[in-house]
Length: 131
Length: 81
Image (tube, rainbow over all chains, first blue to last red; front, side, top):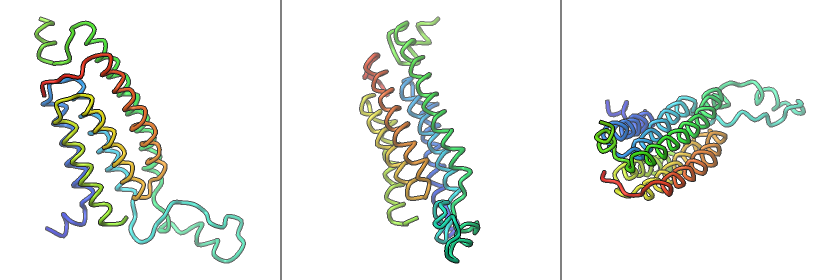
């Protein structure tokens, strides 16, 4: 059991960060604090995907050291799958980071509009003023 | 992945995440969130995802922090929780 926890420590950190962000989104009453919690949540999910892409045993970035085939080291550096880290989650999470910033911008714009109308960022006071 | 470096970065990331949601000042919270983003990008760089790391450093830690500071300057820094 201890072996299982220690060997997968990246995933435990990801779960802890995700729960911190989820708690901030639910329990905090300030709107900017909720947005910060959403940011932490999204970053934790990106950390999970990057952790799945990682390989142990000396795998590096997928760069061909000798692409035109001079010397006999070219073939195995080009084709061996265990020699490079899986690049597909990296590309997916590159898009997710851009979407994260777009979400942040729209959320902050909505927060500014709410502040102009109600004069506060506290959720309880906004709900009280709406009634 | 270098084990002691990775553990130190992960401890810092969790501390920054907890501090960002517990601090009582919104500008401090946004600054701590920027530090969180930079620690996270350090972690991804040593995990081999260099492209994701520099996108995070420029887009999320840079533009995200600037957007948050601009929004807080237009509204208020004070918060109750």
